[in-house]
Amino acid sequence: MREASTELLVELDANSNVTDLLLEQHAANPAHALYRRKGPNGWVDVSAQKFRQDVSALAKGLIAGGLEPGDTVAVMSRTSYEWTLVDFAIWFAGGVTVPIYETSSASQVEWIIQDAAVRRVFAGDHATVQLVGGVLAGSDALRDRLVNVVRIDYDGEAPNLASLAAAGAGVSDTELERQRSHAGLADLASLVYTSGTTGKPKGCEITHGNFALVAKNIVAFLPEILQQGQPRTLMFLPLAHVLARAVQVVCLTAGATLGHTPGAAQLLEDLGSFRPTFLLVVPRIFEKVRATAAHKAAVAGKGRLFEAASAAAIEYSKAQDRQHRGDGPGPGLLNRVRHGLFDRLVYPRLRQVLGGEVGYTVSGASPLALEDAHFFRGVGIPVLEGYGLTETTAPCTANTPTRTKVGTVGIPVPGTTIRVAEDGEILVKGIGVFRGYHANPAANAEAFVDGFFRTGDLGVLDKDGFLTVTGRKKDLLVTAGGKNVAPGPLEEKIRTHQLVGHAVLVGDGKPFVSALLTLDPEGVANWREERGLPPLPLSEATSDPQVLAAVQEAVDLANQLVSKAESVRTFTLLNTEFSVESGHLTPSLKLKRATVVQEYQAEIAKIYG
Image (cartoon, rainbow, N blue to C red; front, top):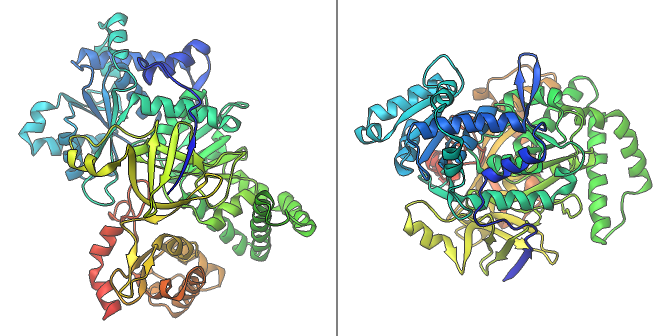
């Protein structure tokens, strides 16, 4: 059993709560731009003073409507400034925020509203209002308990944010302060429901201390990113996800200016105008940026130049790692010359895709392919990979600008201890670990051992305290021959191919390992265009000999990472796409492995005859 810890850097008064972080920023500089909103004429700053005023007005409206300290309020909306505004208004009124993904089904919404005993719902748009209304119409109990549904995005349909603020005009500042200051660090701040990769979502009780202590200590832990110059970032991940939410509180604590964009579709356009200095990104975005750049180069007849530039970037980063570890030389003269040349000809264009001023990116939510990490660091966009779960208020380990090992998820964040049990399971204890699952004593009894949270993930700690995540315990395949196979590394490697969308290894209890693969429609179109081939529908691409041969090459390359007993013997291309909408991915783009395996039992049966 191995263990690693990082000492707490910042402590807080037990009677304080998350709202005190906003008061601190307001007191330090009321005119400072905490947020930046995108309007018809570009980005507009929102000062600490303006944000506090708007938060207070909405909080008073909630109080006037009867909200008592500890009441739960749901927010179901796309990522926006208004989401952040509503979140802090709920906290100022003494309430508990319950995020709901905007992609959630009616049954999921009904479950969360019921389980969390929600009294009010902030809905992002008309469609969401209608969905919630339909849920309420089918349940007398929910309809009787719910006070109202407030629409976020449009002031013409009441009740809305403007009418809510107006309704609170008669609430005194004294009453607002009484409810704002009611909670302490140990009190509940949010009920965040797990994304449901392994069954019905469970409500995680995240306290004010979880959010506030993590935020304060992350700012002290990453000063190069959060305390130098004028830090700013653009948030596009769903704020219903705990990682996005925790980063939002970190930004407030640091005084980093935060902008919002509703999703990946608008991200690249908004990056160019917002020009962030750091960015929180999920691996799929890195994959898309790199694949798109490679495709554009190939179409422009510069494919070999891009390949050479990519190879130089990856080798440069790997050589830096060897030098840092002390087991080999740093970048050689030829590599330095080639890297310097491409740093003038190719890499600036890649950096410009992210706005041109990004000094660091932080990757989380799912594993990042090792090659992508080296590629982006080599082109001048360092990737700091971290690790966390909903139950740890997101980050419990992270790489830092001064302590980085590519391929690991870093060292414990301050106030956190990581332990790897005898069976390889990662255990966590510290400031971010949640209070427990809401109204679920059976799950709580299973979730903790010796004061540590059992993550369900497998990993290893090296001698320097860096954690590498190797997979999920529940995902581990045990073949009929008794071979344990962690599917993650092979899946990640296969997925790096331009043609592959997702990869799911199967073979538990079977004589060999096989894979269910999906094609990436954009990748297929680009791949064929680069080779002068006509477009091909996805339904035909799954049986196209050239596509099958290329995918086989990707599988063969991945198999070089493992022994023969662990290798993928055969694969099936599915005529579908995995997405949030299809139910195969969570809103944070994690694969719902159990859902895939259950849905494609017939295809699996064909593989094994």
